[in-house]
Image (cartoon, rainbow, N blue to C red):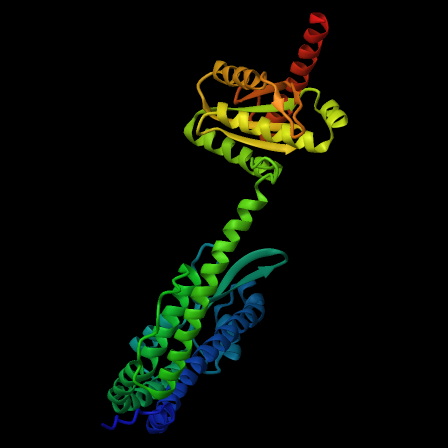
Length: 407
């Protein structure tokens, strides 16, 4: 069974090319008419402003001497050019001293007035100044006759061409939308969804045009590859991010994880109006264990300490190894300082049993703990960490003194 030949873009666009050119020419004509009118209007406004300043300069002496005929003669000598419809000269109180109207207006007054309201929202004005004192004002209303004739001619041409092109334009636009733009919009929609929503499972439907169908098939194949790559990359990135934030020896969060978690804990506490505590922990006699039994023994001690800390902490608490024998704990939320103190006491008790070393020996160590509570001990992460660090060193000094006294 033979399949129907699909229409190509070249064939389809070739049929409508001539009509689109005609439409573009008419559209360009309308655009030029409008832009020409705007340019002429701009120049006409500038001309009015220039005429207003010239009239003000010309009639200034006549205004000073209150010679109305001289004022009218001065206005006529400047404004009798066809671009001005009316000129008024007023004194500082607004009283009209003289009014001049162009006698050569070829259009009815009502049409000229309507044109003025459309083209010039306000008359052009220029102050009359004599010896630094304002003695009046010149107001000029433009003559829109030339612009109106230009607009009338453009309107007639536009209406004539519009009647011939509106039906053809609608047909062409709908066909172009259905046959070409529609399928391309589907491609753009799928591409946008993939980019913004990571919807790699979206696919482009069949368009019914040979070139677009081939493009859609290749695009869908590319999406399938991207979907596989994205899934692999997402999985690998998640694994990498988890490894980056973990201490490889103890499995606890590392310093980077702690520095990211502490500001988040502050933000969460502010939002929920709750308190949380930072515990800064340091092992006792860890250097001596390393020096006596070796670094492998020190690593075994760190692993055992981390395991005992996790056994004591609550499910919502988080423990971190900051480096060396330094650990930190985030207790969130806490109801009072006693809660943090109880957790610190349990941590100390958990370190009491001897720790087995790989060589069969056992060692004992202790844990010095400093506590800082938000918001009582600070509002900023740096301040909380500094307070907890100071409290830890104070606890270490007290523990060392107690040990010496016991011996």
